[in-house]
Length: 493
Image (tube, rainbow, N blue to C red; front, side):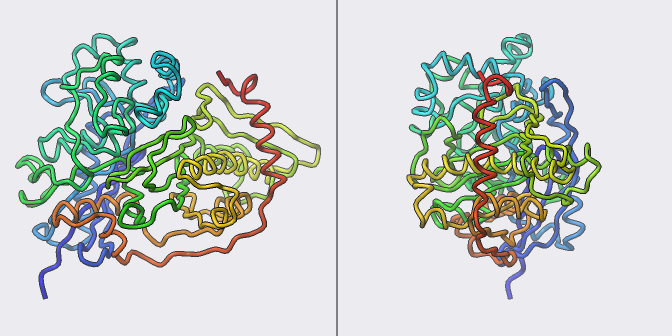
């Protein structure tokens, strides 16, 4: 029997780093190492020190290696999947000039609006990049930096995304992939390259940017001697280009050209995200029209307020997160951090429809309903971008895959079932973002297709839940409040 080989998939998210150790042949999860991040900021600011990400990666790999019991010599590949959009600016020595501005930093909303207008409106942007600038997008953050910290912008010798920064620490090579690059606002999904006209508009020199690898599974190098020593891994370890977290989750779930296409996924985490792998290039102003990491596309919609916002409401009410009931007449839009889809960066939470008999459990239920209706409205637009009619019976019956922390919560799962009316699949795959990164690492080591690798792995049994009758009354009530309140009460432009 040949010796076992092991690959490492790294999920560097907003709050923490997870490093999964996976048997490269079977996909069996051997261990998960974890290390926390620190996020700081107020009044719309959300920042982290990139050096903390590197230290967390080292700590997570060390913990996973110890837990797995695998010999370091068995590791053949590693790949990083990172939180999207964050702006990392480096000096000539590769050190951060300032904390990274994270995806959920909303300070650059005015710059996003100005950029949209400067190019001629939303349709002009989607025709080139697939997406319209919002506060989350890296281009908006770069414009904010140039306007608010011009000395830092002028001193910048390299611009990176979070996963790019870590891949460069591993290999010494400045590399990214089409998936994460497509979330910057300066990469064209129409041409598959950086857009010179957009770089000129942004005042950004292409020489500051990493090269775009063909896919996230492209081998961009072995570990450097320093990285190998820091991680305790062989110098021969193959390092993949890596990708963004959503693109990696798609790989981990077997979504892509060698797997499932046009099958929607709903991720219930810090943010609420819906996406699908598609062969159709998306160009809807209501979506982020990303590239996938395997050569297909990944239309995606992201809401800022999901599990953290609802947990905050539960804490204010003194309730356990599952101690809830349907909201009745109450409507609660939990836009505690502004909102991205719909684009309401200055919004705050909104509560209406209170009665004398409204209970705390109903208020918490209303928070769940507000968050879920928001993300499911985005799902309908996603399906249209894939060339599908959400109302067509076959499309309406297509299962919705639930991932993220919320997928393990009874209240989240049941609210999604009630408001979507769809069959729900909770994949048995543990840590799909990190698992997707592990598949990219295995592909970098072997040259195989990463989606085919992930689809062939045995990573756990799915939980399949049948559809329930859709709660159309709640859907319409929440949607009506959102439509009527978005301008005057929610800070719409």
